[in-house]
Length: 53
Image (tube, rainbow, N blue to C red; front, side, top):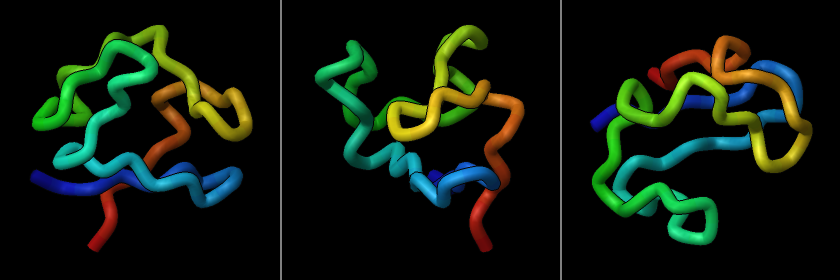
């Protein structure tokens, strides 16, 4: 699964780790995160993330 990076603060969402503290289980693809999810570091929307190469 592909990692995604926040274009504002460079936070990286790693689907292998998920975000259990936010109710996102390990193995959850970025596409499967709820649309109202926000970056835990800077608060921008999911739309401000890009796939990492």
